[in-house]
Structures are given as C-alpha cells and as structure tokens.
Image (cartoon, rainbow, N blue to C red):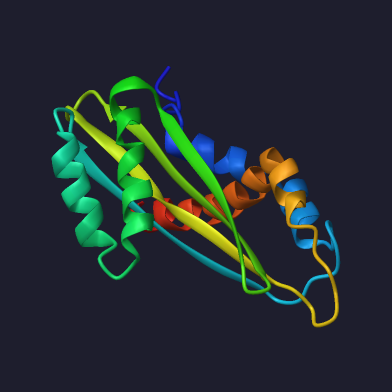
Length: 172
C-alpha cells in the first residue's frame, strides 16, 4: 500500500529514450559518407521552470540572456521552439551546414513537462552541434547526413540525452 513509486518524470523518460539511441550515435561517429578527420562537439542545455502562462517574448528574453555568448541565429533557433509549450511536449529542429572543408549538424530541442501541483512547466532546451573536419586529400559526401537526417538527429539526441541526465541528476 505505502510502497507505491512515484511516476517517472517525462524529462527522465526522454533522457532514457535518447540514451537508447546509442546505436545511431555509433553509426554517426563511424566513417559513413567518406573518410573524415576530427569531430568537434559543442552542446549546451538549460533545465529550468517557468509559470504556465509564460509569454513567447519572456521566453525569447530568457534564451537571449542564457545564450548571450552564442550567435544570434542559434538563439533564434532555440527561441523559435517556444510554440511547443502551448501545443505538445517536445519540439526539435536540425540543420546542416557545409563550408570550408567542414560539415556541421546542429540540433536544437525543447522538452517540457507540466507541473500541475506548482502550476509551472519544467523546461529543458538547448542545442547539440557536431562539426566534422575533412581529412586532407579526402572527400566527404556532403549529402550523406542530409539523406540520413533521422539517424543524425537520433545521434545528436543521444548526446543531448547524456547532458540532460547529468543536469537532472544535479537537480536531484
């Protein structure tokens, strides 16, 4: 009777789901699409709470403050995910870039969980980016990631999930 376990939070469930995508991450770091050099990863996420009646402008202001040291286009991509707070529990966007012998993939993502008792929403948002350098005298199929967008997304979500698990553990 008194031994019931509380339900696992949505954010914890999503982090676990992302971590289960390790196979896609392993595929991603292999030499798919041609020989490549170093991969450079960059990721940042924030877990916080907001009132349920959070306005889009307030969220954009918060993103601009938290990510003030990042390019405006990245802040705009993260802020554009706000619609999820009104419609569903997760939103994501992936984009690819090709320049100067590099290919990049950037995943921006937001997750939220309504806290009905406190009348707040717990929100996790941020990005994961990989920049792949091309080995000297080798070729990389720039369309390869684009044609495998779902697997690239899952690979970057795996990295997002590792950070989310760390953040949630810190929050207790």
